[in-house]
Length: 121
Image 1: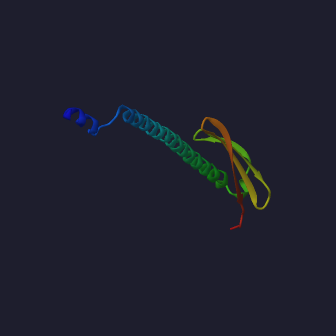
Image 2: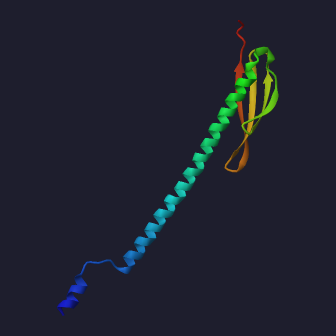
Image 3: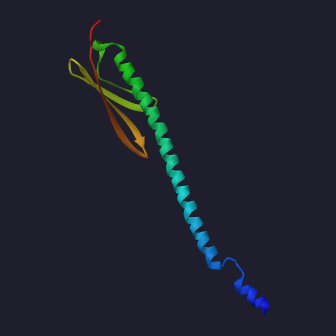
């Protein structure tokens, strides 16, 4: 009798509590795994965007390197990014540069606009 009384009052974990704990743990671990995957994907896209910005900066410097009077429209590929640019206007000149890039598996075009003026020497 004394033994039966101890079994009823003994502190322990029931099978239902263990199953609920495992389900909650599975949900938490799955959510963390998904968040890690999404973070890694955005980190990779950020690296790609940084390379694209570097290529755009290089191309803008190349376009303006020959001087104000030599500005002309054209196209090029820099670091694997196809780019086209158009020069419009007389003073100041408007340079519109478009670059094709891939974001999350889809091809997109980004447009950059700058104005260049010649203040003379």
